[in-house]
Image: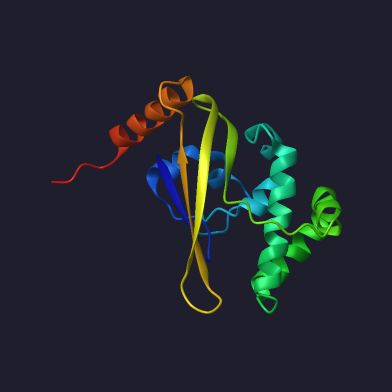
Length: 169
């Protein structure tokens, strides 16, 4: 099981999350501090269609999530700038943004083509955690079906991370 809290400024740098989403964190679309931005990666990185097995579905969902956030936070300058950047640079984003889809998906299947361990199919469940009247953190838990090659691959990834982590003294 992997959990990823979503918060302003990008995805936290949990070592297993970094390993699972290595192409997103390694992308030129990450900010100068190495914080990943899923929307930039999805729409602007040429690796994204290979990494996300269901890339078109990721495009639709990501644009819908951005539209939902824009409705919740209409005065968020960083969000407006991101939407402007994607509108300028990505024909796929422009198409999806024009569809006016607003959807928050809290569960489903995420299929990834990981460069080191191969294809992964993970079930995800998200939970929104309100912090104030407007701020929301989202916790997403990814799991692989027990007894499947996906679980085995995820365990390999986790063991690699455990083996490369600095040991406490």
